Image (cartoon, rainbow, N blue to C red; front, side):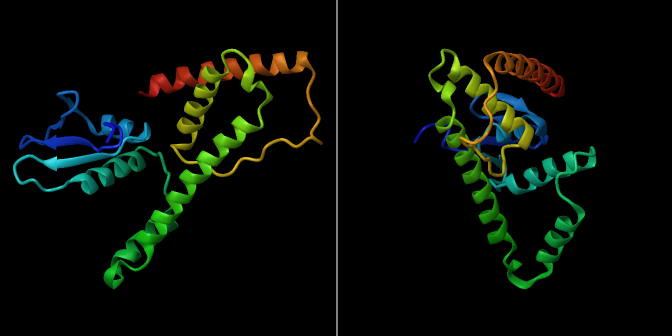
Length: 186
């Protein structure tokens, strides 16, 4: 099994400090959130008791982001989550959420595949680097999730080479600005 396929093991010491067993250093909740945004699964274990604390810490990460005004979960969804805890056996909410997120991940993969298949620039030198930037941008902007993407049809008007060059320059500028903003957020 590849190392990226295994969950990243984080140990919590009695001092409540979190220790990354792969890099042998201490990490914060923000570091753990970054691992997850990068697509890595984590497992957080209490060193003394051996208890799995992953759920508790993931909920803490969400609560921290919500309390800073990064409202990802609408109030009605939070209400539904609370209600689901009141139903004996948890109701269907866990299965529904799992299915929904699986579908979002699948749609994101399909979107990237469509972008690759429909793009005539795929043979252009440097395209792979640009594609990696696009994927990083999409991941950053959507938090790792996305809806569907509609590829252009043959009926869509194609821009001239000059317009394409100007558009590409604008996109590069915007991407550089976004990367700068994202690096400041870290």
